[in-house]
Length: 396
Image (cartoon, rainbow, N blue to C red; front, side, top):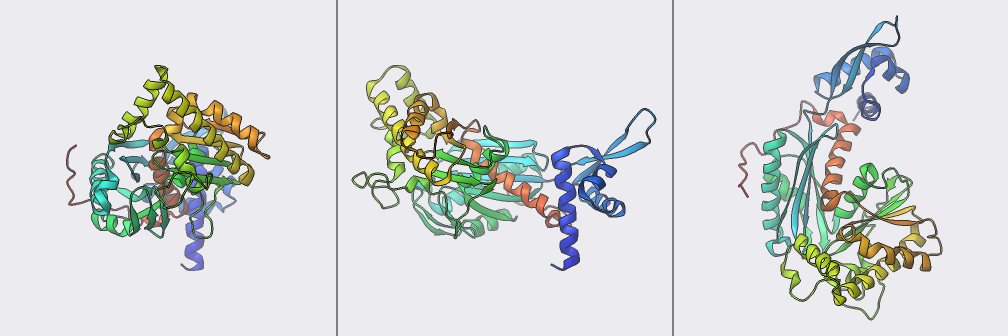
């Protein structure tokens, strides 16, 4: 991209982000806030309105005798962002427009580990088709996966049984739009940072509790990626050298202590994720001794691992999602006590339950698409493409 094109892109982004953050305002407000020349802002507005990203919002006055001003506002209604998630027991989707209005949200049980890569691609395409019927055109798709991801390839997802799966390319061939792939916990952490219970906390850790355990780490308001983009594999912290064998092939990983299987009664693994969690909650409510003891043990191990994270990253909050959040009243008191007992640097770190549910990763994935557009509106030129032009979704 040439220097002039880069400047144009950056200026379009500055205007869009100002409107996203401040709502309806006048062109003069944008000039003052961005420092751009009045003629430049006028030109940028004309372009953004033509792209369907900004709309005229009428006129207003700045005082009793003030001159009328022409207001503008972000208009994301013509741009859809779709986040998908494939996990051990389900597939989920979250679609929004550029302004954050939810257009589509769904989650259904699915045996991803048993379906293999090709079966999962078909299921993701089916879910995307259902979303497309509600959303129309899309700026892009981001898929959340519980595993290591590099440039659209799932290099290792132990709980799915995948190695070197080119998920982005396979799904792009099905959908015909831009597809990116990211780690589920990282994407959920971005959603929590944007709109969760600890939104805006510059130093926080997000933990997803499902069959596996993953982590997303926010440091200084930015997602910690690591040298290869593989940071946050908290579930594979070695906490018990004499412990059980993990799906990753190692022994004594943290997720063997706090993953959902640690709470399951015999025979429960054949149930769906929601049914398993509901069964545990019901047993605890009924005073089942085995369940109560198991919850106490998982809470203790959750706090032990949390103390390691507190010592390493000094977060202000550890937000727990997935089943951890569903059973928070049973898990978090013991976890918080253990963290405070063990952590040298954890005195002000609180463990809190997410309010975003199992859709957090899909929500974060959709938010990533929105951020891509806000960073570079020119990716939409001459306009977002229609998703699945020849795809007819199968009814559930």
